[in-house]
Image (cartoon, rainbow, N blue to C red; front, side, top):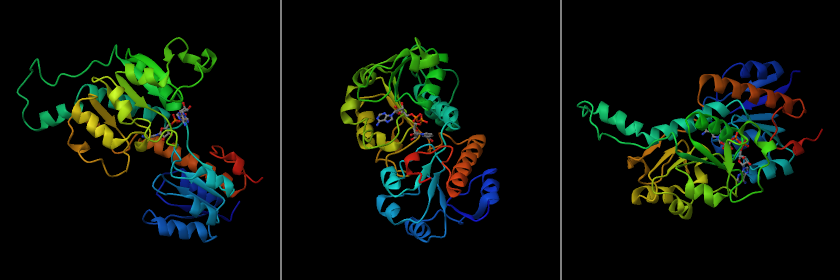
Length: 331
Ligand SMILES: NC(=O)c1ccc[n+]([C@@H]2O[C@H](COP(=O)([O-])OP(=O)(O)OC[C@H]3O[C@@H](n4cnc5c(N)ncnc54)[C@H](O)[C@@H]3O)[C@@H](O)[C@H]2O)c1
């Protein structure tokens, strides 16, 4: 088909651009559009589908006025789009699930290991020229093997993290839908039956040595980890967040890390990216990554391919392979 019109807000790798160009025309701006330019694009009537990324915000006001058929998000998360408003306005939204699961679980594990074993402090120490040879009390950390990992959420990335944690000899607890949920039948646990333990939210929080977050950001999960939760965690516990920043009250986290309510935090995401809560960057008991959970060459290419496939389907008035709101399809 020709004639589909795509606006791609951020450069995406091949084969995605070839797929899009085979289906129509592609406009790729030199810079990420600001809110005003994104609004112009969406209201112009010149584009069928916007291929977007997490920094492009589509709120209800924009979606109500927009003259586009779809938004193909270059991410598995879609908290940058008001899905209810998109659906109400018959705008399909697509995402890129699955292809970034292992890469993101690798980063969750990396943060667990790096925080427990103080890898960043140790690296800084060596580079500073202070290393004078083996010293028995130097930079003592925590054991990962034999410790308890609590997973908030038990979807794709949490399960991939559980697989890694079990291989590292960790006990794995999970709470699929905090706070509290129906028990998960063994049949739904598949390969994990008998290997991981379903707990309620309070047990997860109070018994985990490592609490790793794998829930989407929505109104129920915003500040899921707040001052009360941090206070209830073990003083030796480490919080790991590869989900979304606002799932944690970052100001409360800084206070908890300073006062010793918890021992450390490994973060890939922040409440108000790219800003950090005051004091966070100065804390030695943190490992801070710049939202690189899915950042591998191969994963980006696969994400872009899914994104293009979603976009082409939307432009051709088909249900995309990975729809977030299939009910928005008008047939
Ligand atoms: N750091 C990164 O670069 C990066 C990369 C990929 C994904 N992510 C984040 O990780 C999240 C999880 O990805 P996934 O592929 O595992 O998603 P998923 O949909 O497979 O799993 C989400 C889990 O959260 C649970 N959940 C859903 N709604 C909930 C609610 N209201 N309250 C509590 N729990 C709820 C689900 O039951 C499920 O167990 C994404 O939404 C995204 O925000 C981050």
